[in-house]
Image 1 (cartoon, rainbow over the protein chains, first blue to last red):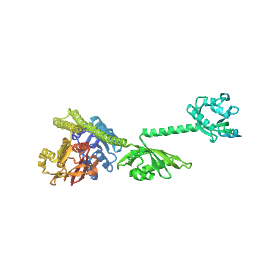
Image 2 (cartoon, rainbow over the protein chains, first blue to last red; image 1 turned 90 degrees about the vertical axis):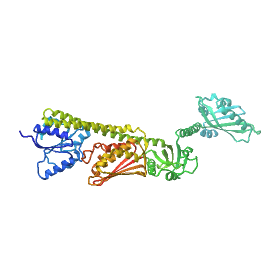
Image 3 (cartoon, each protein chain N blue to C red; image 1 turned 90 degrees about the horizontal axis):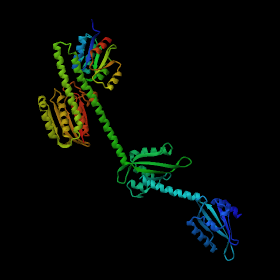
Image 4 (spheres, rainbow over the protein chains, first blue to last red; image 1 turned 120 degrees about the horizontal axis):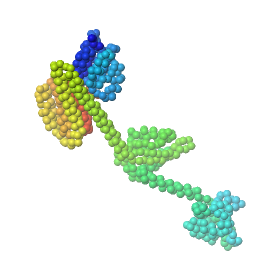
Length: 130
Length: 483
């Protein structure tokens, strides 16, 4: 059975979150490939390179809000120009602060605001929606 | 004819004929007194209606006039009691109009003019004046009067006193007040307020600073009202001046308190946000790790275990950092001492000696301008520690790292300047977030993001400020000002 998504991307500085999500996605065969970046700056630089080389752009991106160097908001502001239409971005955060929720609504690229921990049910739903 | 003339100007007269010994009071007079003619058969009966204080005066005046043919008339203010009981005032004019060859009076006519209204008005005026004086005393305000055309002003004694002068110490005028006494910043505002009033747009009331005799400016409040002529132009204006300096200072203190409280509240909110975020993230991680624990291989279990350890210790770290932040508040109650900067710096450098040795960073100090500062010991140590360890952490590995600590005098107090030649911070990007808890900029795993937040709070709690200048690859300079 092929996975519903070919390439998923996790942008997060939390190695535990990356480890757990990686494990869940792999063991449930939700995506063929997973690429990870540890902050917004690294992600922008690498994704831009991907695009230029006409390599496969991830279809699903899990984007953490709180990261050093360039945070989730900073990433969203910069990626607007190069983001392909079909890419679905899911904002993740340990925060339940309404201000963050409200701010996420101002970005059209953001499909959903996910509060960590993200369980397997949610992941399954998301990957099948993509 | 005499009757006709008298009647038109008077409120009643009486006529006494000595020869026939008759007494006649006219209808109008009787109506004025509220009685019937039959109640006034003679002069004596009229006299009973006189105010006791006026009776003797009347009798004497009349007798004098009878005996003295050269006196022209009797002119008196007389008060009568009206039938209803109220007192009415009259102006009495009486004359002997006919005498015999020996000068004995034959006929006397006395006439009255109603003064009641006039007297009442007088009484009212006196009452009002008294009220006004009492009022100005009671409200402790000075009263001013302005004659618009001439520009002259009259000040009440209290007004002079309020401004620190002796009553009537000098000539006063509109120009003197506007050009020499009102604080320059407030002249325009006051003139506008006055203009608006004179053009009937709004009441005249305004606050302003005014120069007092001792050279000090104090806050005053003024109100006023004008009398206008038929074209709507003001002729004269009267108003009050009240010293509100104490009230104004209280206001300013309250506003400052509100500012402090607002920023304090903001810090508290941020703190709550950070608490919820960081504690949640570590706890959530631990939960999700435990959830996948069952279905994994032995190898993976070991990895999970490591992650668990990692998160557990990070959780503890977070709680400790937050405890540090909370401690700021309790430390604030500790007393400020005069501290030697050299001594505290020595202690701090000793504590960081391992890191200083390893990195080879050179720390120089120059506290010659201000060797000592009054501060809370724990704060000063924390500030110096954080500044130096930041310089160490963010040193440029390609350079000989240098960090200098210097004190300088400034108008606001003592400036503590810490400069290094390290990596620098991109202020354009990060200035806003600089002091937010847990914001780090270099991807540096050691940067826990608490340091700057902590010392900023400590500095501000002391009433000081912290500023930063930085250039990428050149270095960073922190300037801390303590009062």
